[in-house]
Length: 233
Image 1 (tube, helix red, strand yellow):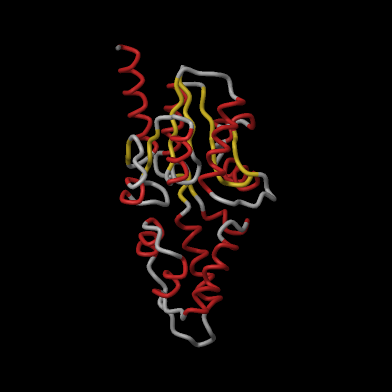
Image 2 (tube, one colour):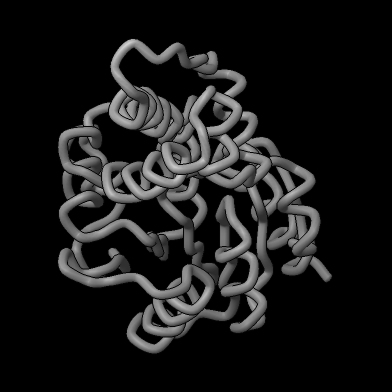
């Protein structure tokens, strides 16, 4: 019996526009009146984000001096999860079809995400995705929770899911960051990293996931092939 754990942002939800909108707001807020800055095109901004270029460095590239870049980074961290910007998220292309395919493959699907409860619920409702993830298979952070370290938090959430959900013979993890990869390793789960999220191939490869693929749809294909091969052997 198969279970699939998937992260939300990256495999399912495209957050690039939200991050870009916040970038533009913070750049404007950090500069002095009349100061010339260089607003990066979205494609270049997202390339830097996926390569994990530090926020302050992105601010500097955009024309902010050191103190401004520091303020820019702090403000970005504060604003990126603000409720007002969640509306800019949208499903990754073909992600809904991939979820439908998972439902044909197994009834055991759960989401394990660093989103807070309100942010997860908002996206599920906005795009009518609740039926894929009923409340009992949503593993996320409480609304007022203060995060400490993404790898630690994601590992804990995966552990909670494994402890609470009914036992299965095989569980796969799909995600788009090092936190997903390290959490899967901590619990001895096969892991597929997707390139539709906030890390590029080089950053993901550094953590040695079992597979790196373009998106959730490709991940489902691999899981189906691997489980089919295992059942025949």
